[in-house]
Amino acid sequence: MREYFTLNNIAEYSLYLTVFILPFSMGIPNILLGLCVFIFIIKAFKKEKFVFHKSLKTIVLLVVYLALNFTLKGELFSNIPMLGRLLIIPVFLVLLLQGSKENIFKTFWLSYVFLTVFVLFKIILYYFNYGDLLFNEIKEFHKLLFIDRPYFGFVSLLGLILNIKYLQEYGKQKYLIYFLSLTSILLIYIVAARLTMLTIFILCFVFVFKKIQINVFKKVLILLSLSLLFVTSLVLNKNFINRLVINQGVASFIDYEPRFVIWPCATKLITEEAINSAVGSGGFTKTQQQLCDCYEKNIDNESKKEWYLERKFNTHNQFLGFLLVGGIIGLIIFIYLLYQLFQTSYKNTYMFSIWISFVLFLTLENIFYRQYGCYLIAVIVLFLTQEKNEKSKNSSHS
Image 1 (tube, one colour):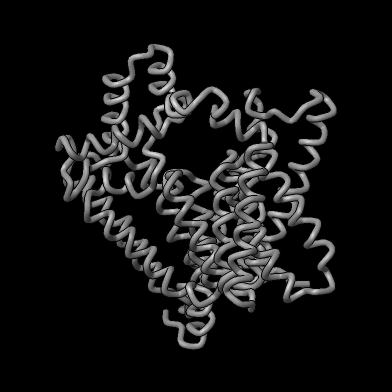
Image 2 (cartoon, one colour):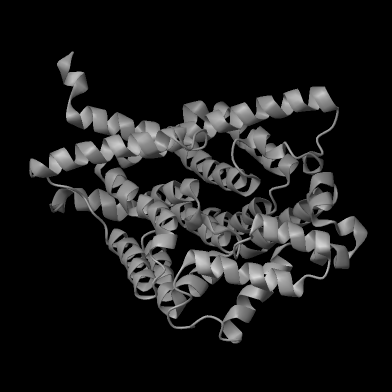
């Protein structure tokens, strides 16, 4: 019995439980992370060997640079909560690198399966209660998904990619995988996760060109058919139409979509030299205040202005976010991290698909600014360092 309660086993299963519970709880992952760190420190004192990866160094460099930048500008204390979230990424990644990559894959996939089933069940209940599926019209919408709509779409997309991967590896479970894949696509379609729908369309191109061995003419024919199917599905999706306010004209869409206000404000802060382009504003808090000042000056509609100031919208683009906060230096470090992940993933179709999905998600969300996002980044980085990590286990260093 004692052999089941060794430090290694406790650390390993705590790690798997952390990965599994991520979409369902904010507090429990932090408790489990603390337990894993405690065990890691004990093992370090015993001089055990650990696995690391070069992308980890880049993440640490980014966090250290931001912390030093904030300190030099006298903004450190007001940014400690955000830096604390960012620290989750290297800490969790270090722990993940010590575990079994394949088991972490399976744990993440199992979490996606439970999330999909739970959301499907809640949506069915919602339909019987309200008689429709027009989710954008109710405030309780996000409660149905456990996590915000973009993140639900992103996790579902990662699950779909793993489904395709496992379809080849576990052929006997193909009907279960088919069911999960169709259910995920249906849920993504119903909740109108716009970026996820577009990313799926783009990944279809990647899979057709990289995985299907047919002549170019047939590939073009398949892609044209997929394009027609994609456009038709969007036109028939009432949630999608309502989210974009397309039925009220292009002007309404531009007025409704926050990024048409946020991105010009972010650009204005740089072009008008309100922020030092080399090193940034020196803090998340300061940048947020400058964005809010811009919203107040440039939005004429009072109710709309009040909504923006109440929500305190960030840049909704991670590239812009790091440019404003850390300047060109911070942005270069961030882009270099993505380049490292590209190098270790582009030869594997599944991992390259995850990389594409991750980069596209970064163009519309500040995933590094959220606790759940930081945990998710660590898992994604682990996925994208697949081959390197497996090889490095034989040459690990303490």
